[in-house]
Length: 575
Image (cartoon, one colour):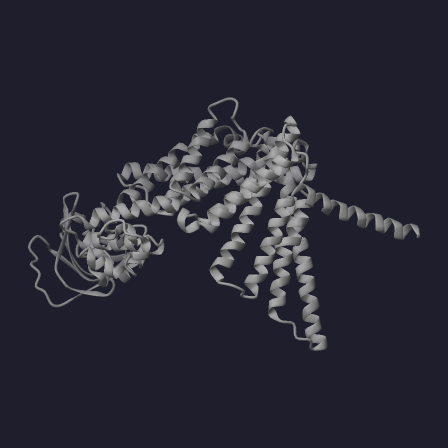
């Protein structure tokens, strides 16, 4: 045997040995990946009922990720203390895998949020070796190694899957051989669920003291440092100034934070945590903005967190808990805990805690009675019953009750609010209309209860007494984000627009927002009502509104987007 052939054979044997090591190190993970690949191919061939097959596929994938995290956790404990054997590692992997699969397979009973569970399990993988020890620098090095391995496996997946697909296309174009579409899907499934993960598993280091791995070469360190110093730090500080200015605006104007402020603060908090985890070791405090961010970032969080708490509390009080509001509240709690930990000397600046607290929170929120879905179901059930048990209900309350009913229908929990009380789901009414009638609600509004929109048309001739007004603005047509300007006989320029649930009237001397009655912005689509004069008062100023049409959004709260009609006012109020 020639030397080149012998060298190639030895390289091949070493490569096979590395995959054998993967099988010996992660046997249960590999078995679960094989099972997931098999189920995916069944789904492609449409063998068996679609919903159970896909649920089994997602459950097996989550089980594999959970088993990997358990294996890495006990491997790290064994490296540090030497008290865990191989059998214990595989037993822990089996238990974790079974839990991951059951959370998906029994998602209806446990009200599992599958996407949230999957994100939490994936994020737990790099954290798992450092749950019981290690350092933040070692965690960052391990995270870097896993990220690099993932990029390599993604490239390998694209090369292998794309190469095989190109071969099939060539056979079809050059030789006229028909290649069924399912074959491309089989190739994609096998490479994505088996070959690429095996390649990634082979690159996972078996040593977890990787502090040196976060010491990048000079050029890379400068690049990451520049990213933090010139992009992350300035943007985060500008973002913080904007949120503080908005808080001052709410305080001075006496208003409450808007519904969108919660998501803005959430984006701010996530960007801040990512910047601290990734860029902090490579940022130099000689840069003024970087120094301000690194030293004072815990002190820029309280005011944005207050905005989130007020916004979420207001909407939960008015419309109940939904999964989105639950996650906003959970993220606010995570940011508050991370900021408070900076007061203590030992956990200060520990990026492991900055990562593990949100990951554990996501995991807890993804299933069970404490989870986002189950909590939202309880809240919407209580909200619905509180509304329908009132002796008198207005149009807005009816719309809210039907919206809650629609949510419960989507969650498969209509039996919770059946009039007989707590009947099984199998005996629950087949739809919200019978249940709405049973509670005395107008089922004709059921379609609009599931809609995010409302609209009204006012018709008919009506006589209006002009007593108390000396100006009539005819054919006023205003929309959100667009002002209508009217020049008064006195020469004053009056601007009208809509904002929130208010008609905003502005002059040089003052600007007043007149809130429309709630029944005008309740759930309704295309309903025709008799035109009547609506009197609006605020800050000692009175105007009259004779509406022609209006429309807007119902979520996250009723908002006016368009209004047309006639406006009556007194000129002296706007001088």
